[in-house]
Length: 611
Image 1 (cartoon, rainbow, N blue to C red):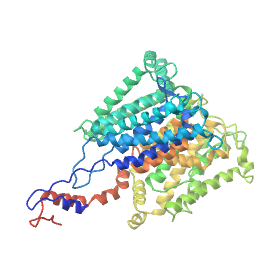
Image 2: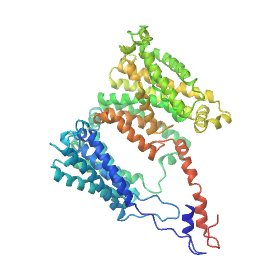
Image 3: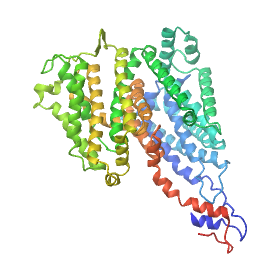
Image 4: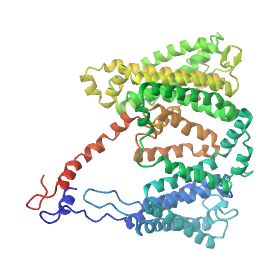
């Protein structure tokens, strides 16, 4: 980089000049095009095209065609993206290379997909790939060839991908603000199309609960089939576009910064009003959502409670625990043994009497897991805790503890939560119970984060050796993190047991731990709002969008790869955690600052920059 700066220096005494801007690499577009084609072939081979063809999103356009069209659009956008600006080079401007790169990529995707169509039309490969069904090319609706024969269909495939690639690459001719607005509009339309039943239920709930006539809105937005009407899609897109433009206005301070500038009394009043508004919305939410959507929300809420506990262990203390499901199982089985009349003890207690014992057993479990791993960190800690999680599941499954925990038959007839005369059998009443525990967990997280214990956790997370040298009691910090995380997971297990009405060992496999871990990574480690978002996106949405259920872990993997490459701090990270993750990048770029300052000061008398 320093050589680039030197070559940009003009004659002695003249101001430094910038080198010409780096241009879009057309060869790169030709290289990534076949990759996009293989992605299109992959979603056809694994059955996503056939499955998604049954879901209409916009008029008669199905989710399958949106998925196939999104590939050349996104890959064309990536191909047409200008290279990053390096010091000493001018900022690139949009030009003919942007849509040309998109066209090259789209054409390559179309050629690869057309070759695949020709191949499966000539060779029956369903014996190997069972999802390559005849409806892709051989018989109606001929999804890949747009209900045409192979010959005309190939032409349509190439033209379809070429056009969308040009559109994707051509977006770079717009300014960044307008590009973001276009993407926001597209995401709003896609979201309203996917969430048709959710939006419809919300509108019906508003009409039934608040007595506001919302039926005309639903009729305007959606067709009887559940797809968005064209007029409704245009309206939703315009709203999304406008909100994005307004939110990216220049010279506008962030809301948090403006709020912090208010007087202390105004801030307290603002926090109180926000809390009252949130409580009011959450109080009305079960009535607005109805039983089914509230049930989905309850499942996400239980995972949210677990994620808040793992957020303390991993997000604040930096301890990677892959056996976290063990604490969840301990809480569930403790509750089942104490309140189920069918258990070995047959006590038949109420839920609230069992909660102190759930906390006690979870504390003991946290100490049992945390004590042997005190001197472990990183990958070794993850492997050992993974082993503890599997040991717990096998113990509950074993014949040794069958008289107590029921073995493979588990424990059934677990009564629901009762509050006075109210019995939380239906999802709407259960929501209020789990919401109370989530509020307590969120408050505990914030309080601990600002306390001396929380500061010790964060110091240990950044550098355990330095924290220990500075006087942090590493043993106490690690054990306290494991214990508090175990308590929150145990309470989540207790709620799970009363919600399901039975517990079985197969409900506590390692997938539960992985799911909670993904929730934290995607949402944002050490961030309560991020964990909330991650839980409802990664747990709630798949439960609601059942057509994605078969591909849940495939989408999890793709999302994790994207997050690790593009946003490792998560969607809503804590500011401190985001700074930590980007410290290396900042350190690598530190040398650019003195170089830039010297370049701005001009060259030395001998025509060279001073160093």
